[in-house]
Length: 450
Ligand code: GLN
Image (cartoon, rainbow, N blue to C red; front, top):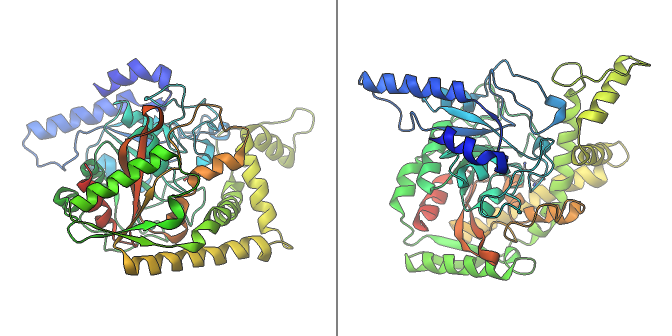
């Protein structure tokens, strides 16, 4: 049914870069046979999943939305993909995304933008717009995204889906094509909070192949989501993230969601995180710095595209031509920003300062979590904007991440759940943030709003 739905609507939506029909059907039939034989199968066995194209999949093309990886078929699976396969989830295919996960609209994909199923002239958020659109359009019941600065939560908000960025280190990064290694984290994109809890439980866990992988304390999320119990829970509204810059109806839906939680027994308090105003600036130094280093391996020698100039085919000219043609404008912009910020004379002024801001943001979280059990803000300042509206203005594009970035800088978990329809009848999201390894609180409070 999901493959039929993809065949029906994806020509228009462009949520998928690759549909793995044979692979999905083979897994589905194996699960059927095992079930018929009376085997006790994992909860999600047989439930199809779509995987963001930044996650490597053995035997399935993986491009990260870039020309530079066109034609590359990975010889191995990411750890989270191994877990999906072992639990019997048919993989429907690979979803569209901003090139190397750099963007908030899926418009920097080298393979054309994804359209928002709510209004096909609008963006589905980014960078994981393909995963969010696929779930919102009923092409897939579950999807995997990655969140470096908001790429799971912001697409969730603007497509009316649920998106979770888990605690840094709780989902293995082995097999994720790295954007910014100290910020990247994979997580679930679903239609309900319970679905997200199930998928999250499945993919979490220690992995010796990821040196930043945590060893335990992952928690039970399904019970938390089902309990819907927020009696006595202190919800802290972040003063710096609800005023100016947030659209009136997005704010109105946020206030209504808080009122619903209050009726369910939660206590609403106000918290201040004064250093959050510097988080966006720090992110746009740290992220490009790490990305400029991570992307150095795409040199035309090892993976995907190789451009050989006819007149002067030396190793250096091949690298230059391959990177020149293989990377899009936003990727080049960030490589330039990152190499500049890391260069000898500027390292302390830019990268060093950004790392200090990162510590201040972590301290703001620590003091806010003394007053509140979870923090709340609108996920994104506006509803989905129109395709092309912000493509010429990188700063306007970066401002979409104002509310989501602090959690990545601190390594703490966050969830975006729908808060209702706002401007132009389009979905808005409310974001909850919790201390590291307290992801269960996100499911408790998210579940209460369903
Ligand atoms: N939109 C942010 C950026 O462009 C976040 C991307 C992400 O989380 N992968 O960097």
